[in-house]
Image (cartoon, rainbow, N blue to C red; front, side, top):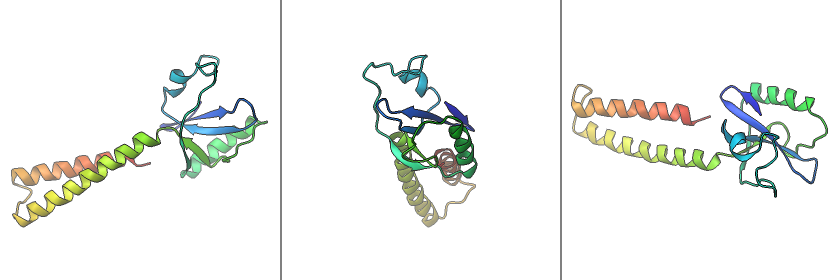
Length: 143
């Protein structure tokens, strides 16, 4: 486990080869999927689907590069700049929900503008609160 900021990276090693992969997953992922000796809970190993994704933050890439070079003997087919995004499905669902919410906000905004609602009215104030909630969700969902 390599905690960097609010993200957690793990190194997954393929049993029958020297291939290793960086995996970005939630904090409790390791405890849920592996024993205390870091072996998979299932004796046949652990398989999952993930999306290869470039790590966009240079500082994170630099930190990972430094730590992974200390652990030699493994081949990283994706390199140190890419990781397997374990939570890509939940991230995609969140982004889809935010997209639908943004379309609803645009439609409501157009309707309020046509009705000449201002920020002092109940609907105008509720619309402003909805936009602020939307922006907060966008900030927390985007990487």
